[in-house]
Image (cartoon, rainbow, N blue to C red; front, side):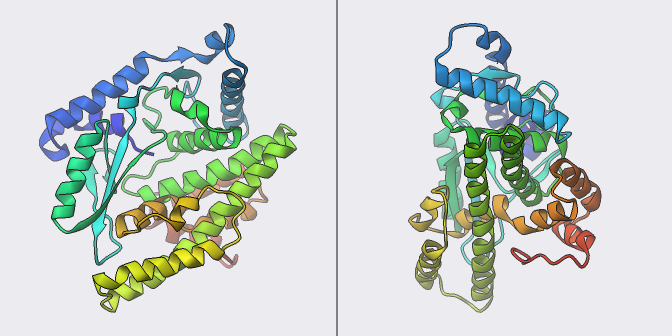
Length: 348
């Protein structure tokens, strides 16, 4: 997820390298507003709440405890509070890529290194950057983010917009973000996000299984099955598209290439509606690379989990130790797995 405030703080002494003063100050101001509005969840639970909100807040505290005690994630004060988010505090991400290559446009920031997006609280500013990049010959995409992380620098609150998500989605998001608190490799956004996707998905299954909640466990299993299916589908499609670009795919034939992939997507055995928009969105390279960031080679993490007998907490620690600070953590993880076969998503 975007790291808006971390980037803002990191850039304050280095404004020429990180962008305009206005961009930095706006990010810092909006994050400060979010932190200022934090209300302890325990305090809120002692008052009058509607049943749905109470259920979600109790779930948040239970997931925190599970993450700390069963997965050994770095929790500290994160998600012990909730903060109201106004409409103008939604983060908008800009991603970009050349129209003839699957290579992300990146921005460099201290501490986190290169990242394949730029985040804005001002939607108009996000679209202005996208327009500028479009004019320079890039595919672009502007989308809202549902959550963001300060990598444990601050006690991140539960944002009020997340209360509209169902129990499985909420659990997944919290565990995803807490993984960022625990492990973050500079300049390795794809690995960081795909690993967090794995921990969120598998963690939700483990959480509801431990709670004896069969109905939500089964929904979490269906959601994770679709994540693996999508990762496999996308890996194959991007391999084909990369080869097509290398062979000189004309830009006027891209749309037909994309439609063929969407037809294949529609034939896959989906169990949820999580990825339904992929079938109809007007694809471009920026959109495809965004999906890849969160879904790359998820079966590698599944293989690591099997290697650790399905113990997710042990798997997280094992993956962290296995990849270290390798320049290609996916390759290092595959090497660490050795002869264990990775049946799905083994593409580079």
